Length: 200
Image 1 (tube, helix red, strand yellow):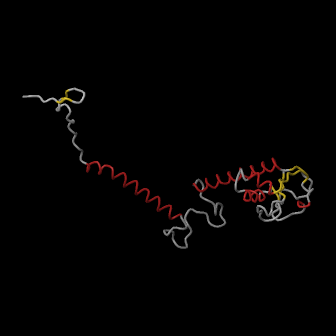
Image 2: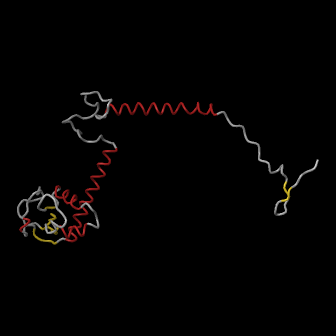
Image 3: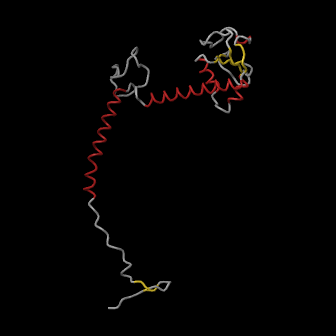
């Protein structure tokens, strides 16, 4: 029997029998594998379905809610926790995070007013006397306490590099009694001369 040898371009000889691919292993029966994995998937699906149905019975907007019956486990009007997200829920966490974020923005606004404002007596300017719209708490104007004032236009030019929500943060700070300004809303250009007072 003759052995056939081939020469490649480099001049080396090769045996065609040595280059043959190795035999493949037998393929396992897929039906056995599928039967073993479907059981746990079915159990997980049933568990998820049961949990979802239970949560929908708590949901006041669900079609599974019995008409006229209050959702079980949820506080009713007048009870503690009514109108609030469930304790430990993702919604509650998001609300806390948002409250913290807005609080930080109010602090940044107060720091910006301190940095660019003028220090003086709170009752010195005529525009600051009396109780204007939105003046809630934090002491009445004109008591002679030290305050920092800045015009809205100047604050807007400075604060626009920090945040684009200046008016919203100002309204929030006024609700907390940290700042005072006349009027319900401040508009760029129109209200550039309105004096904003930071109460300390």
